[in-house]
Length: 268
Image 1 (tube, rainbow, N blue to C red):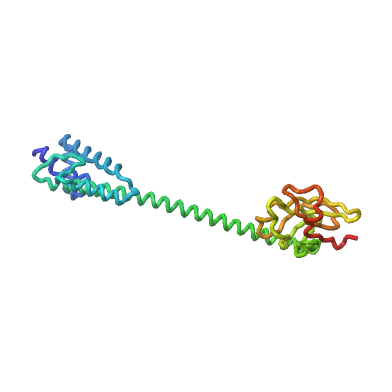
Image 2: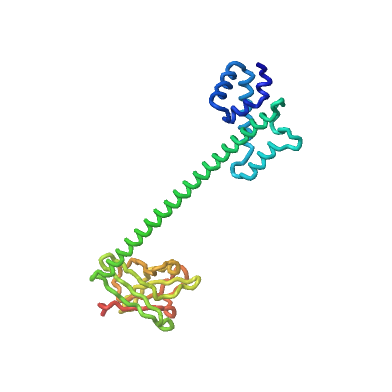
């Protein structure tokens, strides 16, 4: 048996590409065990295929096809990427390398598909997480709404309408005072958006003598959708008012910016 002629025949490239029958593959394997030259050639072919597959990006299928075409079609009808000794059966060599290239392309395609699958799984997990968050937020919002309705329907709650004042006669608001929890629920839907640099400030008032106590500013008024705010109030309030003040609030209400005012029904 001529070892060099056998190596040059192209059958080893077909073996690496997995294109031989079971019987032929077994024959090649047995010859590899007997002849170190054949085994070494197979190892070199496998290494060349690995280098070839690593040189092509799995994300650019058009480039992959162009490189394969370039490797198979050269101007002088020779394989110019990986040198192989030519023989009478040179077409077998081309066929072997074509099979090896197809094998490399298949490996790259599988890698690309695997990466796309991982990305798809990741996207699905993100979508599921977002959906879970939305469901949880909806549950929390529904629970908060139900709690608010229960409070507003409580017969112990004191309802105080706040009507528009002076130049702001068209404005309105409403306070729901829960003395048991020392808090008020302010429905400020009837107020316009606060101008830039201004905030609404809520006041608890005693009437005799007239004494205002700040309950704080509503800093997120413009961004709050439902315009209902929970505010602490431990005062013995006889009235409630809302003024427009500079950002940060004021120590005393600006009376020409008094938007709404309402007296507690039980006040003398």
